[in-house]
Image 1 (cartoon, rainbow, N blue to C red):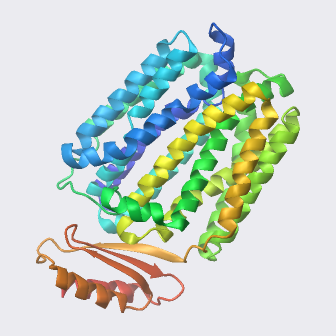
Image 2 (image 1 turned 90 degrees about the horizontal axis):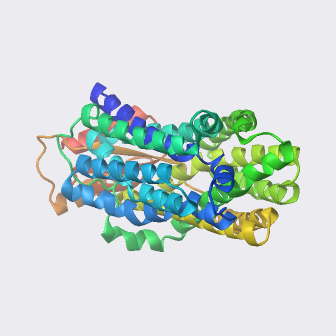
Image 3 (image 1 turned 45 degrees about the horizontal axis):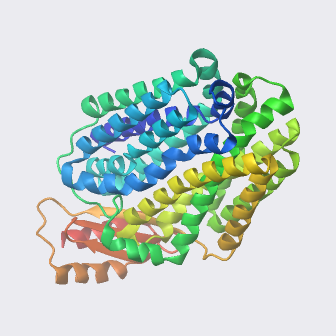
Length: 461
């Protein structure tokens, strides 16, 4: 990667991290805070709505924000989204009742800049380096989540939940400053098939049964996550007699243990082409964790063991799902597939918070995890019967600046020649984007340097 690409990747990852850290930090402590500090005392349904409200508005505005950035510019839309997010954070910080927090969280979600940030990253990175840049941002979000679960209880002790919301607003303003003064200006801004959604491709993506299974999976995964945080903070206080500000002492070793198991599992899945086996195993582990939650939610060590299994499975699934999406999605519609996937995730956040709160309020703690167990069992059935993701990697190539425009006939001829190369199982030539996308079978192609040389020779010719 060039210094400019590194700068763009690191700075945009920082924007994601600043935003998500504030969002995640309230998860381990908000339910208890809301129950103890608002009058009238909110019920579990209201608490669940407060936790999940941002998911609904984020699902509604995420794709429109990304598409609007194609028309009005990346940075202006990101400034707007971050400003809306900051306003929502301050509304939640100043709220005197649970309804105010629900409103603030909904406004936060309306500042849905993810798709616009991804599109800007695509403008600032060369095709061949984009996957690496996207992976950096994904890793940053994962780290923000892990750190926030540990830091959240400590922040609650120092500044309280209103202070965390206010801090989130400040972090969002800091993200605007990073966007203004650190993120480079793109020389060219245009649509990228691998990073942006296209309405014309939505129908094909929504009809793809393999992608639908994955969309349901990310929906269920994040629905269970949000439902869990409606219940687990209360259960930990009751079972351990620890103050919620001390819960970091539980989350820290649990998260460390989960990362120790997660890294070898992902390496094994990728290196040995065993992605489906590891993926299905992680869903089965998540199913077992939900059953254990339902049976032992009143017992301290039962909760700790359930949390450990939960986070092992969650981290494996969260890391492997984007990889499987990129392997299965049609090369020319990858950005659209990821957009639908991200929308499904946001909807899961909302449904999990709302249903988790409702079940906890009406039936009890165990019912929440029985509901989650049913979702995981359905996912397990869908995943077990899905096609194994092909052992492929995606390579992208840009045409030289001085290369002539590609006509439709020349593009088709180039595609045929690329498909004839050893190991190439899918080739897409995008004349308007001046980009070539190849899916390469990792088990068939031989010398990668030789393949690269052959591709470059075809592109020059």
